[in-house]
Image (cartoon, rainbow, N blue to C red; front, side, top):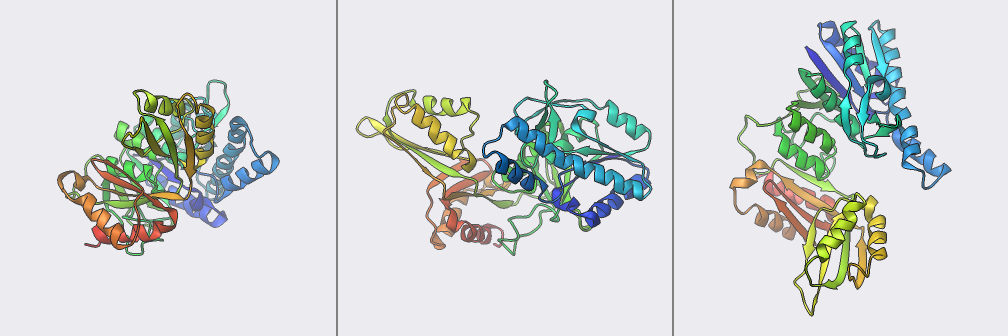
Length: 401
């Protein structure tokens, strides 16, 4: 049996936790299984490296940032191999170049193109535990790249897919996927199993348990995931195509504070204006989420949309530069907003879910600024200061019923 195990930064934050993870991996190895371990950087290492970079240069190049950030995972992988060596387990640490994890060339947010499995299989055949650096790859120029925050999850799923692993286990500091963030909603419950589609929506909408691209890849290649705690042996959450349970009306509530609202006022009410605006942003790789267009009046209309808060300044700069082309009278940004979403496959066959969500927010005195829906999710934009209250109100409405 081949098992891929991924451990996050908090799971390998210090010497004691590194040894705890080493022993946990050795348990499966000693049962005769082949084990591949994917590691994130230790604790807050990535944040510290980013602080160091910006202290040297407030606007460093993405290439050099990737060169710096990939040292975090290389450190944790080497230390883990040393810990396993001290415990008597044969192991080897490999970085992205040594494995042959080929990615696109977009520094800071690369995507996998191909993974060479020969080195890993060779080490497994020699009965070694293989420890691989997460979060990183190598592009066609042989430069190191990173996959974006949470990218170690994607590394683990990609390896599980190409190696045809029997299991892919994602270990975190929580016991699985919850109906809401238990730090904000004390009554949040652990979900025994959840579909890829539901998990993908939750991950995209702010739930930080799994990287959304890892769920996307798991669904594409049929990799069943288990999310569980690295600190104990509790049963986790299974993420798969279909669940055995009858779908809950709402599986979870997610919050995304990394949001900004951009408002473009007074554009001409003629065909092609929306295309010009969003084509400009697409050319600069800026993702847009909720979009709202007003009813035309006096030959003009207003268009509002949300972007990641990190992209807000660049978005405004691009639109201001092309203000005449898009015929805009004024462009404003509001970065004190947040998204609250409910997700659930059961919503498809149950009318009235939106009204119940809006009722819960109304009863809590929370104003809704924008709304977006899909078959299995409803998202509202609200003031950031109301986020915790909104999350509890909506959770009480649907999960505590």
